[in-house]
Amino acid sequence: MIRVTAIRLGVVVAACWLLWILRPVTAPLLGAYLLMLVFAPLHRRWRIRLGSSVAAVVCVGLLLMVPPLLALPAVWDFQNLLNEIPFNDTGGGMTKLLDTKMMEVRNALPSFIREDLAAEEFDTSKVLVAVQGYLFAAGQAMRSFFGGIFGILSGLLLLPIFLYFLLEGGPWLARIRAELPATWYPAFDRILPKIEEIMSLYLVSRTKVATYKGIITFLLLLLLGFPGSYALGLSLGALSLLPVLGPLLGFFLLALVGFADGGITGGGFAGLLAASVIYAALEILEGYVLIPRMVGRGLGLSDFAVILTVLAGGAFMGIFGLVIAVPMVAIGRVLYAEFVRPWMKSEPGTTAVTAAVEQSEGSDCAAS
Image (cartoon, rainbow, N blue to C red; front, side):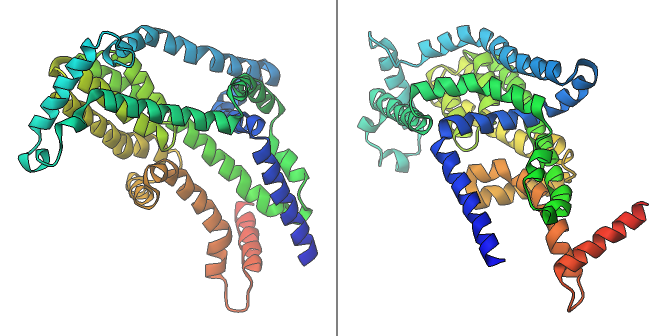
């Protein structure tokens, strides 16, 4: 028994190592699998009328068409944003204007804080150089992970191809089940379909939340006269789907535009404050209204349970915990019902496995 377990563990470790070595291929495969979970409800609905292959082609077509159509109006907006951010300010006029606004921010701070901050620290050119360095480092890390620019481009090309085959070739759980020992079948049939359904519901709900967040951001910034309001709304909505790095980039982008222009606020300290308040309000709206209503209820969690889960996830793992807390709790409920609850209710001398079997048999009898 120990030898068989060691062999199985070795196979799993070797498979994980191989997946890491082949990450330029496995990364887009993982992305395609997550997209498959998003498109799975549509594919199931359409394949009855169109057939599995045609329904998969339609889903891939939506993936290839919808993002570019949404991004087209943002091209002009992004150009306006670039004009507000002087990365290539050859004349130096915009940099001098931002230097003035930086000094306004310093002068607006309380005196006990202002005394500890030298005027040289509010140099726009230094800030822009630091920002460019962070962006370059992030780009280098991404290139290293995917194996260079060619790996990134090939990953983008492979994504829709993988999505088609994953949708057309499903269900994949049945194929994975066929490779496992027969003694694992009962637990596999009870646990894995529920977890896959939870992940699908969560990803679909998070996509809806990101859409609503992007629309609300666009309307708020449009009312305040922020330049590039559509591009900012689209960016903040899309970045909310990216764990950890997404919210940080979203805040930095909004704060930078608010400081540089700020619409009716005039930029500077007032624009930076307005951008910070808007971002905080959006995060509160997402975390305490949209996610409990649209994500929690779909997963069978009450609004209070979702809010408590989000707070605990943020306290434990920061921004990343905010993102993964809700699906982890939903999956934890499935695992608790499968393994922990039978053990907790088992009588002394009764194994957890026996209790689980008895519970399963009792539920089958009640259903029949």
